[in-house]
Image (cartoon, rainbow, N blue to C red; front, top):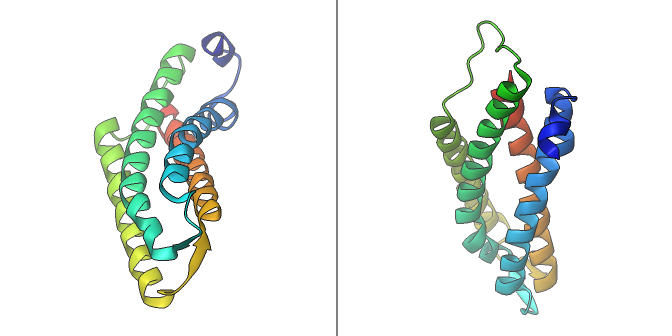
Length: 154
């Protein structure tokens, strides 16, 4: 049903209304239970402990979300027979995804260092940590996947 619907919508509508929310839901359903399993049973969680999950999650999620977003944008362009815009060439999916993953990893490592330096004693309840990681995962997936679809679909 989605494939038939996409022929009647623009690239922006597809990215913001279909592809982004779908990837957001997938990542919330995957990372939410993992975060709850890791932190949900704890009374309090040191803020720095969140990075035990966040560092690999950010790298993997940024890489995979961008990769599949780039593929989705290219597939949309092929389905709608929209010619690519002159002078704009999207990055190859693997290279673009790895660059996004490495940038996300470096940003997460910088945040880890800043939190450990500035807020070493800060704690959150376990349920709040799990909820925050789940919300971060969904937001990041929505933003990165939507951006990748728009970049590749041009």
